[in-house]
Length: 418
Image 1 (tube, rainbow, N blue to C red):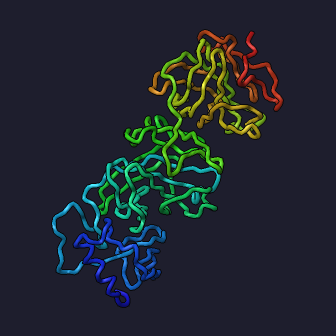
Image 2 (image 1 turned 30 degrees about the vertical axis):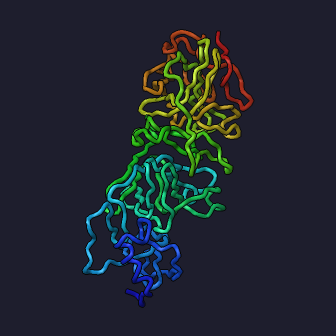
Image 3 (image 1 turned 120 degrees about the horizontal axis):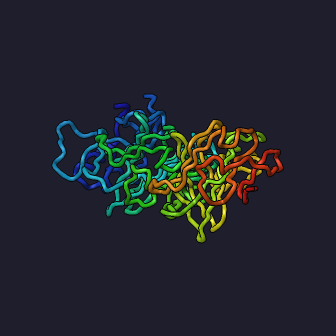
């Protein structure tokens, strides 16, 4: 031990063992002994004169009071278990659910704006100091034991930065230093023995949503299986910083739309000339029916690639434009209804439109050679007639309608036809 312990510090462990101190951690909120930085390099703070038995968590600084069990004392059988540092935690935890993840913020850099939200779906509160967060294979973060218990129905927010001026105005409960993968990753909540309380392995390919930067993914219902991508959707609530999410409160995900509808792929620009492919490509959809169709959670796929449509209504006899970029300033002046995330093949591929359940609604095996229109940079291919077999290349033509940016096409409008 470093230094000497005060009588109060010696008395606290005995209170914890006798169950008289209140709370799972046995931490006295009136403790005024202060905190001092250790020199172990772990970044964990301890009570003055106390040692921390906690593991290093990537250099993250935590307030983490430590008590020590007397060597002759053994805990009696109870629904509580001891942590390595003497804190008493429940042997069984209420269902703590990972229900929102912001892995790619746009308003601020990832190392400041990423967050993970937890909701308590149980009927009793839980001492969050008994819980650890693990991201990936080995990056872990611990929660200070003086953090207030998480009540039933309550939310707990892990953030990369606790500074609201730096993190986009988000009020967090605990900091973590682990980087969230923009292409997917594994997140676990662990009890003191390292047993998983909850685990999510998220992805960016279907059936997981693949929203653009700045949009969190949210569990549609906290009672659903959160390791199934079909139960997640892009956030719909816009934050003050311009990103979308609902950190620290009830989710407002985009709800999945109609399971049926006869929607056609009727225009494709796979090789724009005025702007780069990664921002200028688009696919236009047409609804030949007499009723609007909600496309939320529908999917568009190419050869081995998929993207979830994050939301939107296609009107009766109307159009819906999928584009690589939502920004007209960079995509060539196009008003895109929803983004898609994969590149189109200039030599041709098979595009499919699928319902949320995975049923194929439309399929277009476009090519860059007859009977399909030959490839021409900056010129879209469009269906001659708004209805009919759009898998037949002879029914398509090169657009003859000039656009202000110099390319040719009719994105979001009736085709030239003829």
